[in-house]
Length: 90
Image (cartoon, rainbow, N blue to C red):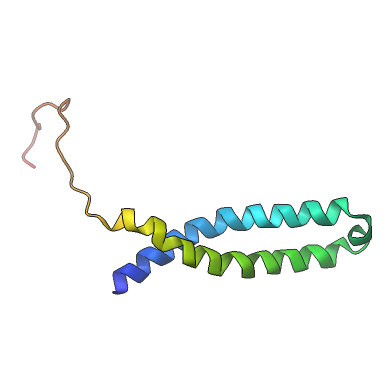
């Protein structure tokens, strides 16, 4: 149970950075292209930064199990057919 939550948290953190950048970029464009919001851009960008973090965190947590299932499978290392004999004992 603990490792499943760990994998879910790691996948969610990977998605969080990417999705947070996308949502914040949209907020920056909206603020900078709107003359009424551009007057107080500092406050609106701060609000956009906080809102993007609060929106993307739960979204990534819900999205992570869909992708994390592929990571839960055990990865079996196989010998490459192109590799020669090992030079030392493995």
